[in-house]
Length: 116
Image (tube, rainbow, N blue to C red; front, side, top):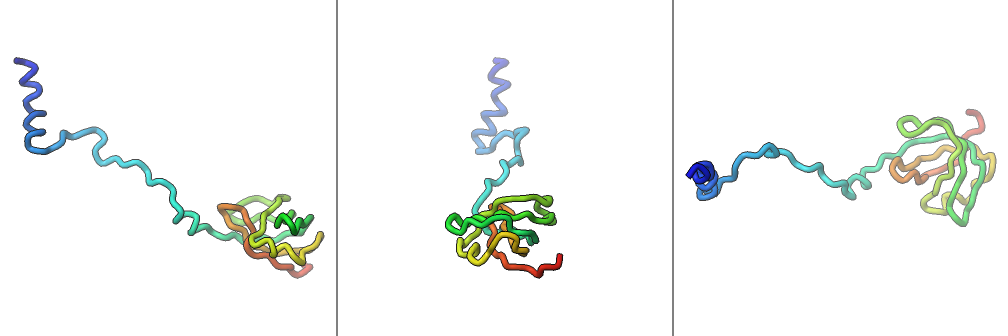
């Protein structure tokens, strides 16, 4: 009889269609990443010197200054998209570029003035 008294409140709640309160009520799993994040990728502006160009692969090696909000100064290989952005670039060209902060792909690049 003791067991049935303990179950009585639960049975009543079930009959009324209510669910008992839980310590997990109101908690939700974090939203899964979506393509919306990729669509909102931020572009960052960089300045540097071209150390190498692989036009067929669409890769440019740049010794760049710090890119505020993205990374410190360093030498890095960047993919360029489209690959045709690499056309006309040569070793020792000073360039300004925009890089996607998610994929680290250069989406815009142009020769800069020689003076820093």
